[in-house]
Length: 540
Image (cartoon, rainbow, N blue to C red; front, side):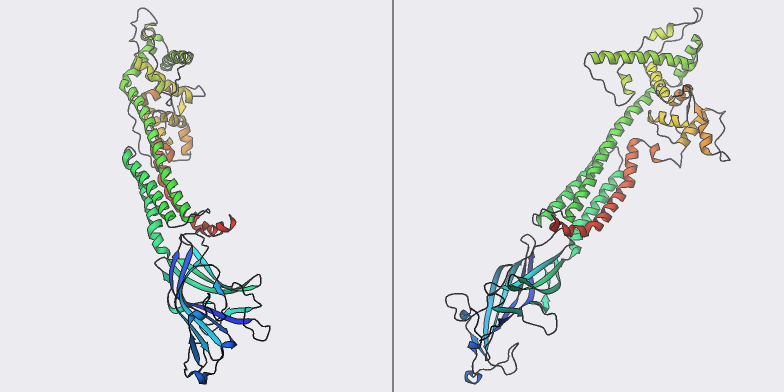
């Protein structure tokens, strides 16, 4: 029960805690340890005495000059069977543990009791790690009475330092505010709250991190890994091990950094900024690995086309002369002879496919010209034996390789000659050459046609636009066949765009331009959304 003072006024109790050092901030247990001196002061008139009888006099903190005091055994105030005096039951609501040292109790002549002790208190602190490592933690320390209500005890703050804005927890001027290397005490804020009929003194400690070690330990290595992954796009795309190693190492190190972050933080259900940041880096590394897989697929595709070009060039221009001899012998044009070869070979391909379907054999071709490797040759004597007259000697029949070459080129030619004009323009030639592994720009294709047809006007800058001049250029099937029968080396085009590159090189060129933008965009986006991570814990 409180002290009977003869009035209905509650007993005036003042408490203070002077922090000398922040002992530690534990992220896993979400607690803060403080080391300092706790002082509780109240007035018990039953303990008043005549100072002239004690013979002892000393001036103490908070006492008036000339005040007299007595030192009483601490056992008188301990909560136990030996307690003999009234003590306010003031305690810290969110306290986890407390270690007491050097307790002292003084009683002044007017009955003022001052109980002090050096303590190491550990309080719980609900931390939010959403913005880690840029998070700021607010840790409250709540003083209140357990059994005594506001009608019994008026709990207040004992001012340690003179001036306004006193709080129950004060920081000594020479206190060590650093907890290790990562946390620094920023501000102390005091408020008063009421829970039911009891006053609660709340002091909020604002603690922030030293960000620089985390930048060196987490963010800078992640940025260096992104640079290493970006450098892989400049490695020769034919050197598979070097590029794969760079991408896989980037993924593994990002995963290792993510696990290191998780090991120093408690398991939480809300997202973490640093975790999402590193996961995006892992996705970028995986994307680089997928891109290289696509490059390898394109290289295989380009290799198959290169084999077709080698096959065409193996027969060379002599095949053109042989077709001309057949055309003269049969009284037909160059294109008509090639059309007969195409029709007969196409019919044979269709028959082979029909038999395969009946037998349940699946024949799929990624390259439209790869199927030519699987079909049987035509009747080689038939095309060479159809003579116009018996008096003229028949030309040599076409071999299987020659028939395959004519079929492959004529098939692509027909697919782009949609208007049946027996000629394709520059824009159609550009697409046709892509089927044979040549990736040229429109200007390069125009130069190729111009060099083949000397009669075409030379491209020049004048009143007519370059587009109008290019649109007039065309090449027939014989020209296309002759161009593909010899190595093509068009002049260098400074205006060559990305789409005029081989697919394998195009993938690398796109990633060389896009990847730095993706990394910078990631940094910008995560920098902008950082404040949003603070609200996740309260909204989930």
